[in-house]
Length: 328
Image (tube, rainbow, N blue to C red; front, side, top):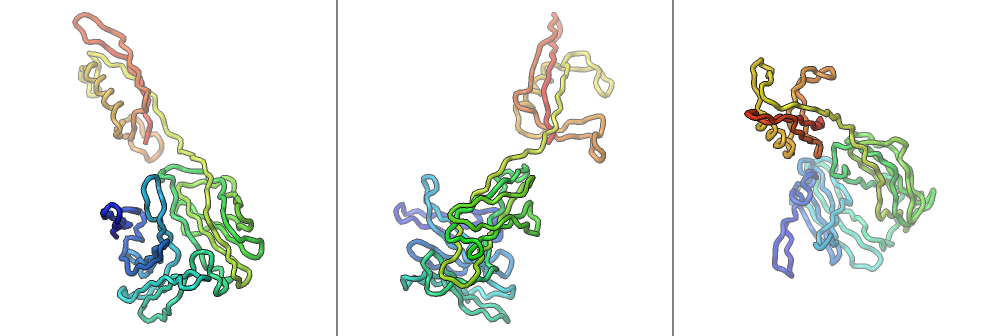
């Protein structure tokens, strides 16, 4: 997809392979697009499955740059083979009492009639159903630290029109890519309500699912505006290994030879300390069962301490050096 800026006469690549490289399901073919002055709708085929996503894009200011924010508002298709050339979208804003996007798809051996999806808050022509199968699923959130554990405390829901037993939003969650959803709580109060996670809920990656529910057909629907998750980082305890080495001449090496170059050895330690790459530390014992003798480590910043302990005429200076290694 290319975005043409009329003011600057520039073209920008906004394909999901560029803007959302990790959302591989969205790296498929764009089959249809339509919109109005505030919304751009897209029918996007799954990269590998027979599913069509209906995405709603709205321009928003991010920093000093205007960009499109996309929301997946529906998934279409019963799993049969889709005919890409027979996919259509039409935004309907002809009447003042509704805003709808009509969709049309063709599947082999499946009857798929055109249907509409309301958007905005003014669709009053028909009542909203009390069906509870609709859901909105968040992206997998890892705070850009997918290997670090977090303790999840609560979710703050911003909503409208909620009333206990009449219009509600059920919230589920799952951690670290498991397939089964766990029930959190049900939001019943607008405009704000806080739902707490069970005590000790920890994980690396969090997904949330929101399921609006109504007790009957009504022209007022439960609306979800935003949500905010409170969490605390719980990094895994790092294994630290404080080491002290003596650098001098005439030392007995591991192979029994006599050697030792204190100046070059000290320079090598400084190089390792300044570098960001992993090092391999060879230890005489295996430590925990199943571990080898080699450990991947890095120098802990600021831990290198050098002390000159001997300087004699005709001999190189000798050093007492201490530092701390962290296993990675």
